[in-house]
Amino acid sequence: MKQPFKVLATSLLAGAMLSSSFTAFAEEVPDDFVPEIPVYTDPIEEDKTDTRLELSGFTDANGTVYQEAVRFLELNAIAKGLSDTNFGVNEDIKRVDTAMILGTFTAINTMYPNAPKAGFRDLPTRAVKTVSTLKFRGVLNGKSDTYFGAGLNITRGEAAIMIYNAFKDELHSSKEITLPFKDVSSRYEEAVSMLHEAGVVKGTAGKFGTDDDITRGQLALMIYRIDGFHQSLRAEAKSGFVAFGDSNTQGKYFESQFPERLDEQWTDQVAAVYGAGLEEGDYNAGFNGDETFEGLDRFKQDVLDLKPEYATIMFGINDALVKPNGQPQVSKEDFRNNLVYMIYQLRLRGVKLVLMTNTPVVENIYYDLQKSLGSDITPRYADKGGLRNWINSYNDIIRQVANENAIKLVDVNKILTDKAGGSTDEILLKSELIETKTGIHMTPKANDLVAAEVISSLAKQ
Image (cartoon, rainbow, N blue to C red; front, side):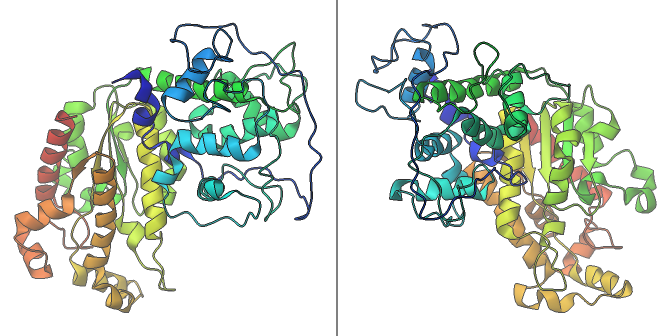
């Protein structure tokens, strides 16, 4: 792979890293507020000059601490200079330009093309989509609901919060961290601590310079170091296989329905080939009833922290199930976003990944089961072509995400439907591929088919 494209190639899904659970800090400022912008003339120097990369086209960066970082941004089309020969390494940078650089680096607009428009009235046209998407993903807020502060300089502390919001799930450390800076208040402590621990930010003489305006060169260094941190994640030792999903991954129903095949589920068969180094309680990260938001709650602990070499993702049935109010448990847009997030985090670490669609459903068995439990759910799917068709519309999202991001796909739904010779209740029951208690789980026969496909797909990684 050519060096100039390492960001866009390795961070193809970078937008997905942006956590929706973290809200950026905002300062309350009236809509008509006109700021008096202070001038800072003593930017913090951060490193010794490193000239390993060839010279950039910007003469003000060459031979300085910023040379390598500016060259990196230049080669990957992440940021432009103030002119053809001047990057402006010692110039302050505006909030809007910081957001644009971060948005470009994370490819966020590609990953989240349908983010709602933010209500900021002071954004230039070029920044509306990127800033809106970053706000949607919890990376930044405005000074108020309608005022972003686009033309304001951004401080080092504010930039640290923004960058931390974007990458916090990679940066979290399990050990206690002592912050060496004396000028970091509680508002900035978590962000600066995690970024400093990862080597992304530094300071001078025991100070971070929290309230100083950040320069274009300093921001370039932070972005460059984030890429270096990502490369260190990819270089970590990895081993074994983890299957992440819901009940068709967990297979707990085997205990009562297929006890003679309890240790021969598809996850066991795949782990026998690719699971070296992980025990059964580790490699099977399925959980009965989980939709993707519930999966995300345990994703780091059950998957990422195990540092697997191989992984599968199989969610969707529970996401698609319709609640009494007529809405699915997880909307299609959120389902897509959650998958993209998981995929990014695994790809970031160099994990070999397979996506899996969900089983075809024996509708009447599932409807009757729910009636026996006190709920007549059949009407909920009347305008959706039935439960089977509705769940397959979520499978279509999985297929689309896999195709868009060149990820191996084991299309469980198609494999089982083709094997059965159709998808009607009668045909599926006759095939003995779907069990007859719930109508949504795979039999041992289906498990064998799926295991073979997953093994084959992982072999092609």
